[in-house]
Length: 326
Image (cartoon, rainbow, N blue to C red; front, side):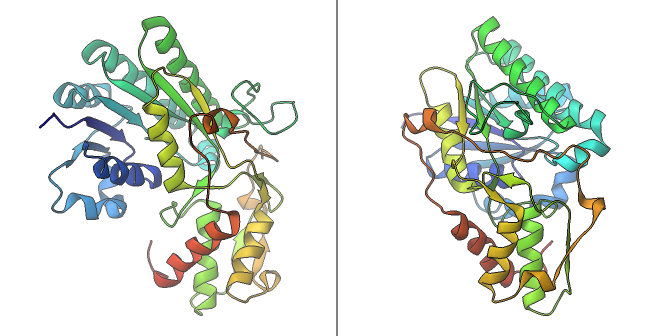
């Protein structure tokens, strides 16, 4: 029996990390997830993997603490390292800009440097974001060659990490590869993200548990995909012969207002009776449009399947069944 492939996933307690852990386990991997101490309280997405799964292991560590990361890499000696850990909320990044850069840029440097010194054979995947494009000054859709002009500390930090990944790829010959992921949702989406905020509120309003929903900018346009499919793209990017950069997107854009309308109409309610707009929920620098061109990754065999309305409905179905889940 050949040795199992070993993978480390940072951000394993998050939406994508938990789906990726499931995918890799289904492919016969030994999976090591890095959890921050704080994430122990938010491990609901992986609790079902921790119990009775001999190939799933968790380690306490933090991307901003290089000795902890180096220790885990040294102990596991992974074949693959999927860096999904981040301060993942764009609006919050304006409130904690320094921490955002430490986690999302210096944290990536810590991983790359530890791999270079301790485990140079390990393949590294960096989760980049469409927020790096910001307002690029060219027409959408955006591809791998589109200029980047981020509009938030989150986008700036992700762009620094993107360039660090490229520099370690080019400068040290490491297998350091990148997916630029546009927005992607699921029932596991964090509660501070607008899509989850909407789906949860709609379910609770329908069940008489909540009276209204307060939102910021309804006009922002986003390219929304389905997280389990995007995780398959991440895996595919890592299995290519050469490290590269791939945009992962659906190629369709919808406004937040369309998401709201679809959500309320799915449960037979008129959104205008329940939604209030408040300046407090608007970002200092709102990116008006994000739309991706995924032509390159389609050439290696990935394409999105879940449609926009199916994503909205799946999130609401889950929240209708779990109205009180945090």
